[in-house]
Length: 67
Image (cartoon, rainbow, N blue to C red):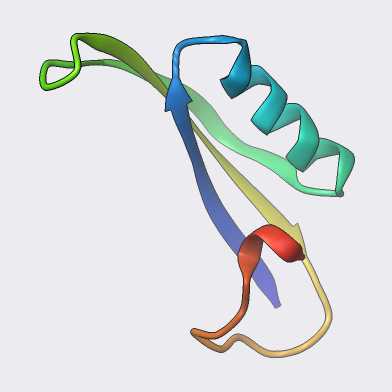
């Protein structure tokens, strides 16, 4: 199965740590990062898609963060 996640966070070092943690667990970057202003919070937000090949079949019950 190919798993997909979209990691998001405010534009702080927390976003870089979130992406780095996913990479250290075998996830791979998928596409370019996105960067946008969140008018409701007044902060910049970052997003990065990641993918990972795993054993098993997809189910909505799969905890993607635990793969």
